Image 1: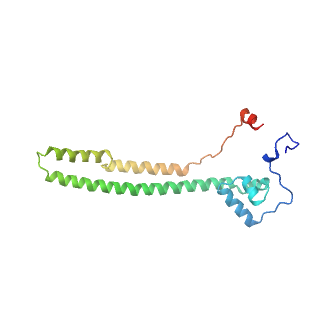
Image 2: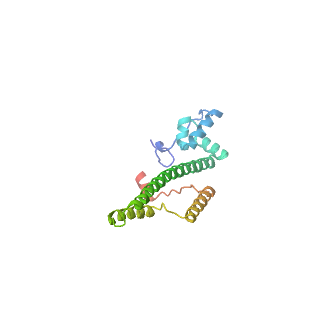
Image 3: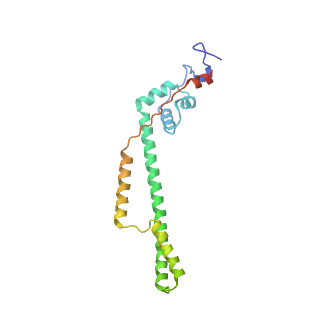
Length: 178
């Protein structure tokens, strides 16, 4: 159960026999695709019967890590665009609904008797709520908001995110492992 180099259980190490298969081009495409989908070198090694070092070397030569980051970045951009588009559609529907309601309120105000304070208060309350929802915006506010959104999109597309993770193993983990 323990190897001769430090007493670490063999279950924690993966040893491969020299007779392992040499991957074909088709196999490498599958390995690369699986890596880009999130599989680890160890998982790839087991699935394709290829040494971890071989996979690691090929990944380093072909710069799979950069491809993975680009793929993640592109996916995030697509998600943001889709969510923004859906939010815009919902916002348009809400705005249309509120505008229809405001039109009805204005019609009601025109036909309401000047001394019917209950109806007047109700109509004014509806208009106040519509204003608080931010439906009534000046053209300047809309232009400013559009400019901010464009700036955020530009900043998001130009940011190169560092996806490195630092792992620190403390003595507590080592004690637990023993």
